[in-house]
Image (cartoon, rainbow, N blue to C red; front, top):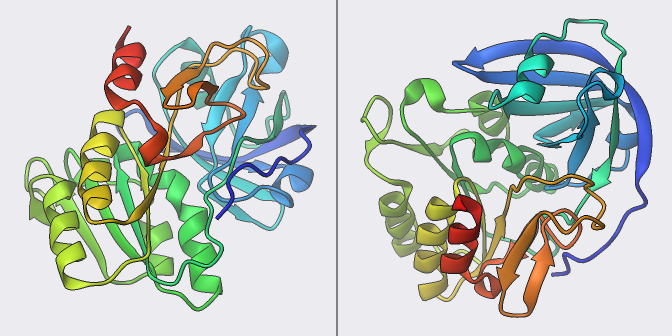
Length: 270
């Protein structure tokens, strides 16, 4: 399954259709972007310019789902740029996106997929889950978060698969504990042929160790700070066994086995 296919980038003005806080400091954003929405693949992202360039750098935003000419995005307010984005109201046309950016989830040939999301990282698996559903394949989905209120895009995944397993750190919903426990149980009970993971890097590392030990092909997705988003600035480098790679254009999707996890996590912290 290939993840290196490239799609030409487009710059497109967008209109805000919805911008709703769905959890403390987590927002659901709907943007009208017909050209980008028609070409984006699951796992790719867009680079959003906020306030017509008043915010110097674009912000990379993962795409949860597309619907017609719409992009559906979940994002966290973590700095000045996303704080300004959270104030945008319906009808705003001051922004534009560059996209679709990056590699996509490789789903060709998968017959028994396992999708594992942690926190906000569950959202970028939404379009993948629906791609499987549209092909008549029901993926197994395991979703984890700190608490029930931090479970993101639940309705998106339930539309693709009714039987979803949840794990919360505080036990407020589903299994009281980490997703790794549910993953081990799921692997013991069912034969999977490929695994897709998205979430905090330590979580992805822990889960990918379990799935790779079980001999399963595993893909992960990274989120890094980036300035240009087109591979020129080298600000989003990821250590791999093939050397440093750029998350923006060589990723964000990688095979888990190629990532040098300890170095990757240390580089993110630094």
